[in-house]
Length: 301
Image 1 (cartoon, rainbow, N blue to C red):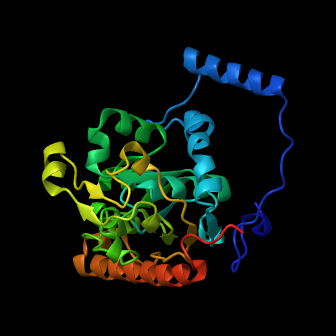
Image 2: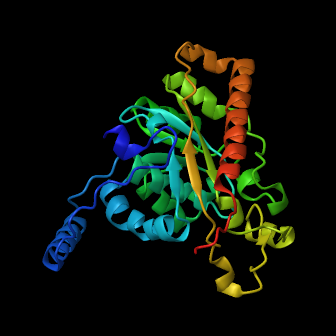
């Protein structure tokens, strides 16, 4: 894929030429073919449960309109995403609900033509339906063993080191990175010998402005937090509709770790310093990207 169709170093993603729309007969034939493969088991699932066909033809199709038309996502720096080799994408996490993970997944699939294998929290896989869907879309538990196996296979792996501290922080702390944990993601990158691609996501902070919390009810439900927003729980289900903020997603220049040996992953000071470097890089990206975007809700006309 050429640099023109992906993205310039300074501008937003290029838009490929429109393909001719398939006829109704072709769409129907494709649908029947898809259903036949599903019923007969003629599809592939990898060792982690990833189902590429279901992901491409069903799950991503459901969230793509939100990406394109609701949040109007623009991507920057796609030339920094390896075309066919392993890398670890490290991003900020925010938005009360982890919608940013879904938008990053669409961005990498549609713009960089890479399937990203996100590392999710334990809670995701304790919920039967959500855990099953996460596996189907290529994601897995955030543990060193799974991360190492995926990276060594040449996969693009995504991680949000802030975890629930980032996604559940109050609106008053928007775009301020929270602590990055112990740096296990850096150790995995060192062991696999792959670059770290810092990723900044601007837009998610405004979709569900968290102005309060219900900690007692959250503990009762086994949740890390139960947010109060200007619209939830006051408007009931309508309060779950995200606000249509303008999004920018930027993939920064990879942080190379070629000079390190796998054994260096056991050096806590080295891991700490690299973790801090990644965090500072993403914070700098966020500050610049937020200024570049301007208002979260720009006028349509």
